[in-house]
Image (tube, rainbow, N blue to C red):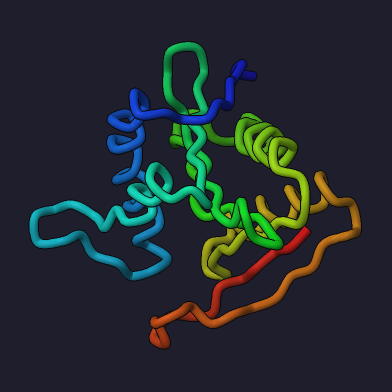
Length: 161
């Protein structure tokens, strides 16, 4: 099992997160049907907002000097926090890193939480249900909500705890 650290990302970490972002977007493109921009990049508004919006915070997950993922949170000033983007690199998956990272981030921002994922992503379905049960026991809910401005997509699954 890899030792990890989860720390709030700062401006010096931004280039690392900018390199991880396309890997995350590539993974998600298979479930969202999103194609890269004409220049080969993916949209990065959520990445930008994680560093510029006072209601959001980015976290970098690392194993020693190696970045292995990230967690972006929004809703810091609202009634519930939302885990808005979450990624672990393929080489670090299935080692408990994701669950440990989520636990640490949730502990830093007490209160209600929500996370959305896609029903057609079986790995995410199992992972997020397990995370909810590990963190909240039986005190969590699941519902489907339409994706804003994307009626062509299946509804997102939202877990709240």
